[in-house]
Image 1: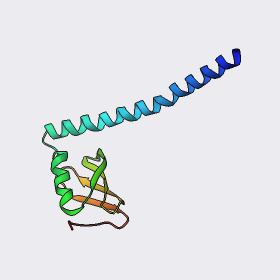
Image 2: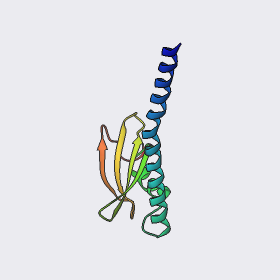
Image 3: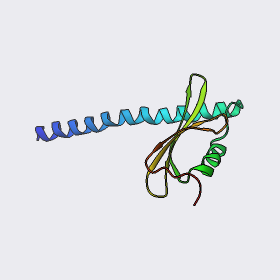
Image 4: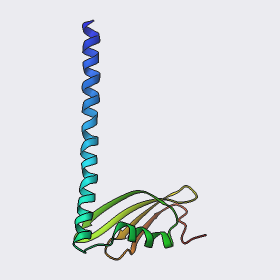
Length: 113
């Protein structure tokens, strides 16, 4: 019985310990959101909706992941799109004017069909 209790406690401890990295990752998402929101309120960047509208004119697909970053004073959206053929396209977009700075992926499709 004692070994069962010890094994049970080890499993519980390991489960709880494995959650902590996820909690800090989730907090990072909130930081992105808070920084993007503040930059938008300060008039420094376009809204995410405006950026996605501009991107969708040239790159078909559904956004599956979006990150907001500031790199040496340059505000960027890093956007991953799932393209119609199933490939993932990674875009780096200037958050101030919506210009696509980098596009990386396989079989990149431009424009609408």
